[in-house]
Image (cartoon, rainbow, N blue to C red):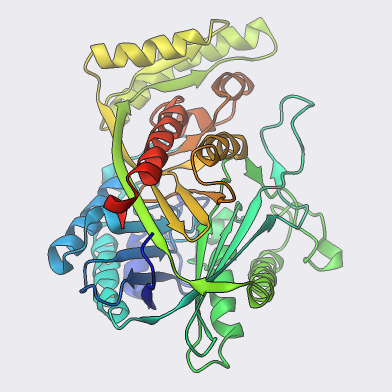
Length: 482
């Protein structure tokens, strides 16, 4: 591994100017409403790591932005500009999104005539995208003034009981999820925090859709709280929030840190002031937890290696039609085939290939996905990667894996990595690909919007297989990856 790494870290305000707001839609729950203002600021956080003898551009760059997701084409464009301007290898640049649903839409979610969303370039505000990219590019040189650092790692099971499984068809599936929670601390020679990462599974609680204001959300409040709680240092630490596997998480009720009056009340029925306070309290609570854990962690010199690859697979879509009665099945099939599919074909800018699961065999999905190749259907391009710090391997996926998908990935990756290596699946790295699940048949049969919110119901399988191959290369081609 690469040893004695130095690091530089900064953050930059990417909140749009007030004059932009009337032309912006938010990337999530309020997507059908124009932005009505700015309630809290949003940021991009940037870390540069390199060996002391290396020049600028020879190390790794980690960028984490307050966004619902950064689509592949925008991430690709940003990585190419950085590579041309400063010499970084695009494969050494990792762009993560916090999955904040109250940030400007850079994905084209607004144009959805129905739910699930239909991605449309016509809905994207390119003025804000250019502003967003310019702000990040202006901030990157501030990370070039690096200093020696050490790293501490803590991993545990998510301690609270407020992560619920929203896709629980069978009784043997748990109602409450207990995913991994990973904290990473970087300190300088003075034993002060330079940066604090948390990798946490989360689905940000929702405020009433009509409000449509830019908010920091739970994730942004975590980062803000890390900054505030380390303000007594010579320089406050920068908080980074990386999203863990969260595809099937539903924060259906406000959790235990909510005032007693609203504890276990659905966030849809709670006053927005209470929801805002919950987001703030959650961020403070999680930041305290991370700093406390990391203060007691063992710190060592930073060792690091990384690997990244682009993958392609055929685009295909599943329209689940499985209901309890034959009448609903028939009605659903007619509506989708006669009205929904033609509508999607007209509104989408890319090939649409519907797959109807109507009391058929699941092998039909695989067959039709394979047929997409022979028919020269359009393919999806995305990115998978691994980023290893000392004994921790961050397994970066381009979408939102279900917790079961993450366990499948980690099990196979851990069989390849050296014994004792910790693993943590991370969502939304260098893309916002859609939902990923390992048990595709169960997901398709029980319905929900997730099967339509990706390029293929088999996308998770493609990603998992690619990550296994990448891990083998990371382990066996060690010298080439430093």
